[in-house]
Length: 232
Ligand SMILES: *Cc1c(COP(=O)(O)O)cnc(C)c1O
Image (cartoon, rainbow, N blue to C red; front, side, top):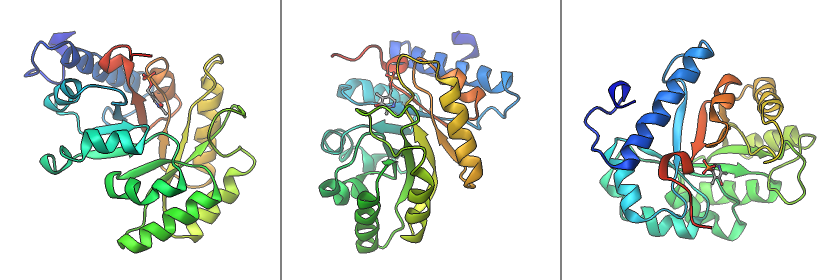
């Protein structure tokens, strides 16, 4: 594995080795799908990770990171942000409207827009900052009641509404049900993106990112495969 590592200078830290292995898997999945290697961005999910793990990830050259909670992410990234001009932070967890200003101050992309009220709050906060917030629409493809995300039926109206509010709608995101074959969910999300002319497809996690790449993922969100199991 180390021989084909895209990071030959990486140290022997376990995290560096895990990053190299996941990068190699992503490249292999791209080749298998006839896609350009490099057409898939790896979002490293750092929720709950200690400082040393984040610094080890940065040392491999990783620059795209995903976090679930605004407050927790501020603690981890506010001081690191100015040190890396090319850092990209993506919010992949639920966003409350009263956290929107803080979220836009830290995150480059909000992947979890799933309701009109949040779209409105993002638009208002974006205007105050003089930016068009970059967003993905989170779709609850499995219609799971406990899970965030707009329903498949209501997604088109939310996409339209977000565009009317002049949010920068870049794509769609989903988290398939844990106990189902994710492939049909990935396929559904890919078709929805195509129908709406959206380029970004955020789908695939540690357990299923090769299948997501086969279905067209442009961003895979990987945590435990890079950092090891999280504490419960
Ligand atoms: C935690 C999380 C991930 C990463 O999960 P792993 O299985 O550890 O790779 C991806 N996406 C979202 C939305 C998450 O909350």
